[in-house]
Length: 436
Ligand code: HEC
Image 1 (tube, rainbow, N blue to C red):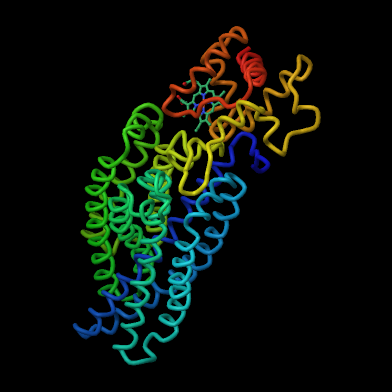
Image 2 (spheres, rainbow, N blue to C red):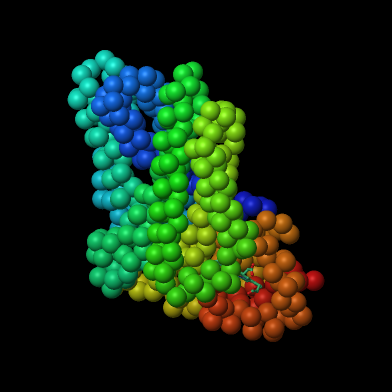
């Protein structure tokens, strides 16, 4: 176990969420844009429209700067943030999927080199070779998505891995294929939004019209296919996730997804009908709407996993929920309930390892920090504030709060309480103090 990264009024999880949502914009752009470029480049050669290469150049430069500067920064940022937010979760993933990431990085390096080679050889080498470079980029970048989606889907539905500990049993799990095809479709919508920005900078009206129209068609197709495939994804979700979707996922997130898809659809259709009226600023505003949709979808995906960070294996608060015999991993409940959470966690302030009458409230707060703060900030405002939750329950005395903690085993969205009976009393006393 590691120290807790406490972010008052916000929560570490939300910082990670903001960073990951932002990262989708450059990463999915990178995976989709070259398909569009290769298509436009082929069209330019076949139909003898060299002016289209002007678009390809602008779009590639946008990709190079936006995706590879901000994408790299936010990508590395995710590693840092995830490592301090949930070190044990990341450790669990690395111990299973280090070769997955190694594979991804090989293809990522091809992408990074590929984008520079593609951009700087544009119009300088023979057409066939240049197109080949584009295709190599297309395939390498899509493989990065193929690999990362496996690890992301594993966290929600690890499948037979829990028994076998096998890399591929966890990787090709039941939400893998729908999630891969959903991301593959939606990335074309993300790519199209940026293509329209690049096209809006073109001087020649004819080229601009053609580029905006083509991009908006790709956008609509990606959006429609992605929406249909999302139904398949929801169908494959485990029962608990369906319960969570109904009970816990806020209305705001559900509306965020639907409204953003609706607005994007109208935007693409409008762009198709009146391509020349789309100027750069509105085209950039479309990215903001896209961000709202991605935020809602990614937050929902994270919430669907509750109460786990890796389903059937590790709770959000890093306590291991079940034995994974094939990996030699043992559940934590027995040892924590026997010795106490304040004893087994190395990073506990002096004088709090033993609970007594004089440190009851303080010990209770530390336990809340260790076991509850991943989903509840301890302040009055922020992510599901614990004081508000306690007031909602209206705990009158320690016994009723202890009763609530005992009942946590039956909650679909919260992990059970772990600790000795004295520690339970301390946390209960803290909850009572909050509800006053
Ligand atoms: C995995 C995330 C997670 C963890 C960890 C977690 N909770 Fe919750 N908790 C939730 C969610 C989600 C809700 C529902 C909030 C809502 O309705 O908006 C909730 C609601 C509550 C409520 C209000 C009752 C209810 O069901 O709506 C209380 C009280 C509460 N939590 C206390 C705790 C305590 C104490 C801990 C630590 C022992 C804890 N929670 C740990 C996710 C979590």
